[in-house]
Image (tube, rainbow, N blue to C red; front, side, top):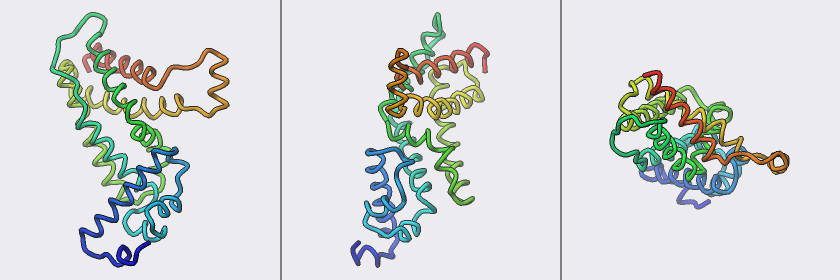
Length: 218
């Protein structure tokens, strides 16, 4: 830990510290699941004491929720679902939209890992103030995803698009750990014929959800 880094007090220096902490969190997340990353390890990676990390973030969990927020926004920025199109036989349009969402999420392992850890792990140790801020941003991102899908599938109502976007989060939360089991579970599953990949399971679940909402005119 450098003395200059410790003495930093100006807003741009404070922001530099936060950026360094978030960068260290991303590096660690690329190496192992978020549940296996301690505050001590995060502090060591960025070159700070644990107490100094907590000057800039509520907790270890708050750090990773900030990473989640940024990763989710980056995914939405890059998500291209195409122009509005008419309904097609067999819900082929819905299958393509759901497949695109599933494929692009599957390419972002850190994002899927954080989504799956959000409710059971990361939201369990944050302050009320941070919870309000994070959930507000999460709601805005969910709304944004729903609007992107609704532009491609105009039969969806605003409420239906919102339900679909929330369903993306819920299905990822369940499909990611299921598709990334321990070695023992993976070996047992292989003996029984294996299991679908994360992308396959996610695409199937999202297709069924989107087709169902369109069929119900939700």
